Each structure stands twice: as C-alpha cells, then as structure tokens.
Amino acid sequence: MGVDYSRLHDPNAEYTMRDLSAETMGVTSERGGGRDVEITDVQTTMVDGNFPWTLVRIYTDAGIVGTGEAYWGAGAPELIERMKPFLQGENPLDIDRLTEHLVQKMSGEGSIGGVTVTAISGIEVALHDLAGKILEVPAYQLLGGKYRDEVRVYCDCHTEEEADPIACADEAERVVEELGYDALKFDLDVPSGHEKDRANRHLRAPEIEHKASIVEAVTERVGSRADVAFDCHWSFSGGSAKRLAKRLEEYDVWWLEDPVPPENHDVQREITQSTTTPITVGENVYRKHGQRRLLEEQAVDIIAPDMPKVGGMRETRKIADLADMYYVPVAMHNVASPVATVASAHVGAAISNALAVEYHSYELGWWEDLVEETVIEDGSIEIPEEPGLGVTLDMDAVAEHAVEGEVLFDEA
Image (tube, rainbow, N blue to C red; front, side, top):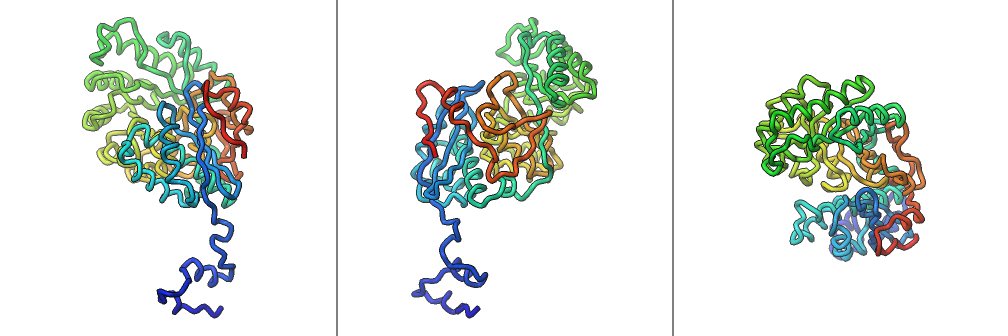
C-alpha cells in the first residue's frame, strides 16, 4: 500500500496512528470513519412510577440520541446536570474512559458510593444505548456478546395483608398461574404482631415463627412451579439473622436477601457461612470495589447488584466477572422502568452467571406503556436485537406520568 511508516516517528508530521491504521486497512483516513461523533447535550426527566425514575438522554451532533436511567432518588438530576460540561464535546463511544472521568471529576461529591454513582450509572446506560446505535449493534454486543437469548425475570410480589401467610400464598399462586412467572420474591420484614421494639433489630421467637409461616405457606403453595426468594431489607441483628436463616433451612428458599445492615461485611460473612439457606446481598454497596470483600470472603451465596445504582452496565459486568471467580451467580436487583430493566437484561445476556433480573412494578398498570416495545413476556425478557438497548420511549407516556414540575426532554 505504500505506507511510509517513518512518518510515524517524525514529530513534525501531521500523521497519527489512527490515520496509519486506516491507510493500512485500505479505508479512508477520514477521522472516525463515521464514528467521529460528539456529545452536545445531556437531559433528564423524572417519571412518577412506583418509584421516581430518573430517565437520561444524551444528544449528539449526529442527531443520534441515547436513553438511560439512574436508580430512583432525589439528587440524581442535579448531579447529572453538574456533569454535563464533562461530557459535552466528547465521543460517546469512549464509554469506559468517560465513566472513569466522571468518577474522578465528581470525587468531591462522593463518587465512590451513593447518589453520585447512581447519577453516573444513568449516564453510562445512556452511553451504551447511544454507542449501540452508532455502531448498529445491540448493547449486549458491547459487553462481549451473549450467552442466552432471553433472561429470566423474578417478580417482586405484594399483598394488601403482607403479614398474612395465606394472603401471600394466594398471591404467589395468582402470579404464577395468571401472570406466568416462575420466579418470585416476598418481603419478610413485615409486622408479625409480636414485636416489642423494632429499633433494636432483635427477633423474638414468635416473630421468627411468623416469618417461617410465610415462607412455608408460599413455598408449599407454589411447589416446583416457581422459585421463591424472601427479602429482609437489612432489618435484623446478626444473631437474629442467624436464627432466622437456620429456621428456614427446611424450606425450599431460593435465597434470603439482606438480613442485616450492609456496612459490616464481617457479620455478613458469619451469617452466610452459618447456614445452608442461600444468602443474597449486593444492592446497597457500590461499584466492583464495594462488592469485592463480599465475594473474596465468601460472604454471599448470590450477589445482587442493582445495575443503574451500582455503576452501570459495564461495572455490573465487572462485578459478575469477579463473582464468577468465586463461582457465585448474579441475581440483579431492579426497581426500574422498562429502560433500565431492559439494560439489566442486556447485562444478564452477556454474563455466564446470570440467574435473573427483578421486576418490581407488576401492580403498576402502565409500566410497559413507557416504551413502544413489549418487554416482559411469560416471565422473561427476550433480548432485543435492535441497535442499542432496543427500547423506544413513548414520549406521550413520559409526559403523562412525569413528576409534577418536570421539564420534558427535547424531541430528537
């Protein structure tokens, strides 16, 4: 091809490695080959779902727009606005570099945890949607390809009388038979009527028996038709959590989630290693660094990162890879709109050790109206093959359900 490699070492030559590669490959040396795209704007709109979902859109000079979502909670839109100058003019294909850049630039706001990581997560998801559209590949391809064509969904269930074991069993059966789910979750941090002082996190024997009665009623009712997990929401003392987990060993529990507060990994490890009841933790620690000790010290049986909360799609992939070193499966916590739910499914498709993705909005009749596509069918999500995330916001639904006073996205 007549490439003059000597020019690469000439400090006065206006010639770059990128140009050299293009010439060697026999393509034009025009920068980027159609991938030289710049971010022009970042916008948010909060939707009033069963949680206040923060939707994120990233705009480019190519007219291509990426959509993402940050975990619910106050402060994320303001932090995303604060990050906008760090993104404008940048190439959205540089997902890892931009994400780490934001972590560094936002260190003063606390970018190792909390809502700052959540805000960065929403941007990172939108970058995956945007990059997939630019490169014309589905988002899972950006994570290394897929292991599976669909991802299992577990349905977080509720009743009007959550403390009533029979009501829980009735709802479990309804969700399995009428809605088609074969994976469920119920809460165990519900009043039993036997409490003396809930502030001390101690479970009295009658309280443990009440929780065991919920587990027994639900698992026996659904039998082999569904796996059932139970969530404790970090509610109990270490000793109480051990006693509860031990009491539940006779039942077919898929996992017991977050039995103690998340700060002390030593206590978490002791509980997990004291019982054969599978223990799941992970939604309330951030990035791969937060999950590291849980995995290295074998303090969990199943890891449960919340993708739009803990750092985004690539960060969740990194957590899954770390978990795989310890032969630990991944069950993604998720309370999101269809946008981040599908993004989590893309991650679930791309990792070998995925168990399921949570769905927390089965009682919200308009959840799926927020996008134009069907998301969950027969208890699973078929992974979209369209570029990016493969879901399209229905702007009329966004406007209808926006948090009062929110400024809506610009149309693209």
